Every structure is written in structure tokens, then in C-alpha cells.
Image (cartoon, rainbow, N blue to C red; front, side, top):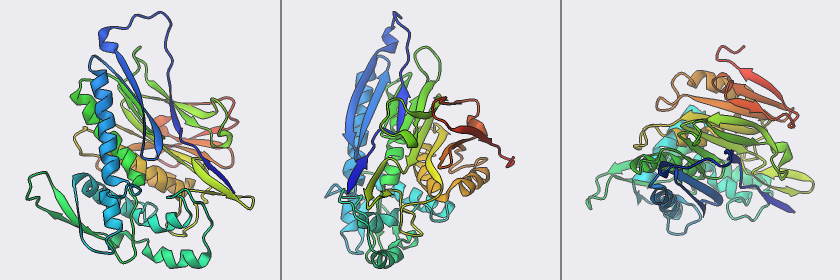
Length: 373
């Protein structure tokens, strides 16, 4: 059995002139963080860039401690181990459970955090990959039901902020991994603003926050991995020019294993229990920044929708975009870059002038409009 994991999904391209003077306001700090099962790169600018970068790391590690399914004493682990009993959770987990319910509803169940037992059956949680039997999947699929997650807000008597009591249905487990990095990026926006950071690029392993613009005033160049050329240097489907935006990519090439000559990836369709077979090889969702005050959740939305739309496939994904783009979740319009198995890159019209196809990719480029033409 061949086991493969790709951690660098979206890449921020650093291009700068030679010999340029850097003012104190353009001081730069760059740190690498290994967290949430991925390699991350945090690069901040400005006089307070070191403090800002490490404050961003603190946010990530705090959320990992609370939300990771693989951290034994996290709130999510305690909930999964409670056997249907009520567990108290804090504000971050509560916020994500509320968001997860909304995303499950808006995507018709294509996004569902209760798919966790099925994902475990494939071995993706523990990196112990296997192909489960149909009988095993048939036993587990009834557990995939977000409506059985009960969340009751409670008043925190210790004064530490809002909390909630949560129960799961019998045999259920949840995984917030499809939201956590996007949520971290949302919170990082607030950190950057608190530290008066003029610009930053934050790569949380496929979740990119392009904050401000490059030092020369131009947009950040965010490259989208070519799923067909994983492992090749600078093998991109294309490049996005982004300012004050989130860009999140989901793709079957990111984590997968091969058994008996067949490839199985980690994005499980909640309806079938099998890796999604939608005709897409990657989906990138792009949205503008929110207020950075814990409202709006555009980064979280991008994270959830990139997974859900990958599962939906091109036709349903574009229909969803057309229905949602005027309003979006919590008033957050979004755009898409879809890479298809048959050699096309489909870009929605809001990104048409911000996306450049890689000439060496071999893909053809199409633009999707809101009127369906």
C-alpha cells in the first residue's frame, strides 16, 4: 500500500526587486508552525511584525488544543468520548458547531462534521489507511446526521465567556478539521489589526490569508497547485492576484493512499461513505476579509465550502455559487476556481481578471458567469 500526503496546497509567491530600501514600517517576520496536522508559514510586516507573528501562532495552538480530534483532552475529544452524555464547550467550539450546522443545511449535507466515524473507517484520522467493507460503511452511514447534534448555550458562572452544553447521538463523533484552519484565519485577521500590521501572508496549509498587498503595492500572487503534477516543482494550475482575501483549496491530491492499483483520497462523501467522485480534482474558494471581530466567518466559510463543493461536482458547485454569490453565508460573497478531471480550469466571473492560467499546465480556461452563460 502506498501512502501519500501533500501538505503545501496553496503557495504564496514572493517576488521582489533587488536593491530596494526597506523602511522600518516594512520590517518582516516569518515563522513556520507545525499544527493542525499541517505545515504553516506566517509572514507579517510592520514594526510590530515579530509580536504579531507569534500572536498568530498562539491563536493556532490554542485552537488546536481545543478543537483537534487527535488531542486527547480537547473539547472535541471529550465530546466524542462522552457516549452521548452532555459536555460543556467554550466559545470557539460553540461558534464552529453553529457554523457547521448552517453549512450542512446550505450545502444539503455535502458538508457534515458527523462523517467522522466514516473517515476513521478509512484510516485517515490515524494514518492507518484501509478500505472498509460495504457492510462496515452501511453500519456507519446512519451516524452521519448533523441533526442529532444538540447545542444548548449556557451562562458561564466563572465569567470566562459564553459556553454551551453539547450532546451527540448514540455512536456519533464529530471532526471540526474542515473548519478549524479557516476559523483560525478569521481570528488571525483580528490579531493583525490589533498589532497594526500593514500587510501579511498567512499560509495554513491550503488556507491562505492574503492581508493587504505586497510591499510594492501590488496584490499577493497565490498559486494553485496543479493536481495532475503533484511533486513537480512550480507545477501550478494558475495564479491568483489577491488583496485582503481568503483563498482555500480542497483536493483529492492532498491526502490519499493507493491499494490494489486504485487511489482513495480523504474527502469522503457523507452520502455514500466513499471518497468523492465528482469529476473535480480541486476546488478553491475565495472571499474578502470580514471584520476580524468574530463575525462573518468568511475564512471558515471558504474552508467548509471548498470541501462541500468538491463533493458536489462542477454543475452543482456552480449552481450553488450562482444561488449564494449575491448574499453568501453571513453576507460574504465568494468566487471559485474549479480544476476538472477532463483538463479544464473554470473560474467564476469575480476572479476572471485576477486569475492567470499557467501556460505549462495544459488546461483550458473557462469563465462562469452569474447568468449561466
